[in-house]
Length: 232
Image (cartoon, rainbow, N blue to C red; front, side, top):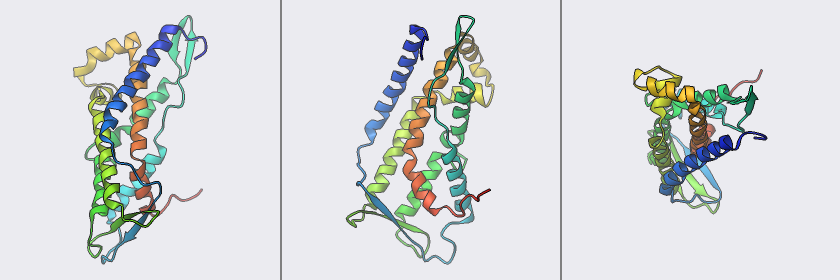
């Protein structure tokens, strides 16, 4: 951060520590290890396409959104007339906004719970004459489908624990998407004091962890997703 005042650097350090504390606490439920290398086996003899029209749309929407999910690479602080400002504040707002359908909108097809349900249905299906059945194999050829499902379950539990310790209701309904009067006094206080900068950065960091937690859901669905985006 260069010549940024020590108190600002210390405050951002504290923000990082607070975010890391939430992650450390949430990850205690992730206890299962994935085999070093795995492969997927897809089997379907149902008298229809491997995905329903809704599932195909859901998969395309999720892949498109996931691949475009932004993350914070740095914190840019600038000095103006002796005061310091977060230069990339608009980008931090953008990061937060882009994750809302995945972490908050339970009716959205790309909501993480709905995506997990999609994956789990295919992994747990044993009758490929009725629906697509997905098996997971280790590099040695062992069936590790149940282990893989357990890992996905644990990752979803971690995401839920992260969200539980965040104030996304305040972030989205009080500031970014709506102007809920329940949060007006607090927002004005955080806005005027500059505290909103630290709050936004903290939760944007946590969203990056959520993206990584969904990476296996993404990989599995990406294999199933056709057609792929066309070229220019």
